[in-house]
Image (cartoon, helix red, strand yellow):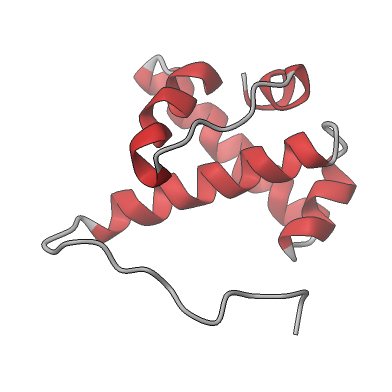
Length: 99
């Protein structure tokens, strides 16, 4: 097992668009991992239980989506506030990687 994983999940009201929910959750965790690792992708990948190359590929995919949709890490943070009621911490490290 890779680190501690939650024993129980809180399920919100249905119906839900599962693809959007998973996308938002992935962004939130990658941003939090990068913040905690101070932008070091290798350490962030370890915290997330991913290979570094997997994290890099997912970040590239997110950058491509951001470019296409005109989004930014700050816009994502605002969007994710509704996910758990709190904003992700603002740090320059993840903004450099995701912006």
